[in-house]
Length: 139
Image: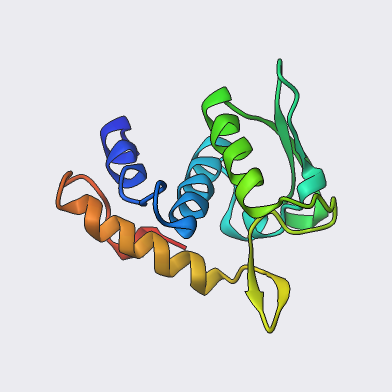
C-alpha cells in the first residue's frame, strides 16, 4: 500500500469520540507496522507487546507455532499507549490485545469483526483516495 492509501484508511476511524474508532485505528496501524496476518493479530496477548522506549516490539505466533519478534515504530507505540489506557485499564498479561465483550466476558475478537470494520473504512477511504483496494484485499 502506498503512503497516501494508508493515510486515507487510517484517517477514517473516529478516534476522538468513538472508542471502537481508537481500537480500529490501532489494529490497522499495528497490522501495517508488523505485517502480521489477521490470525496472528487476533492471537496477540498483552504480554506479547513489549513497550521498551528504545526498541519496542511484539511477539507474534506465526504458522507452525513459530514465534517471531517484530520491532515496532514509535508512532504505533504512541497509539498503543492510548489504546491500553482505554481498553486495558486493569492489566492482565493473558488478556487478548484485541477483544470484544460477549455476555460480560472478554473474548478474542473474530475475523468477521475485523473484516467488517476494515471494509467500512476502505469504503470511506476510497472516496478520498482511488488507490484504496476493494474488499478482496482484506481479511
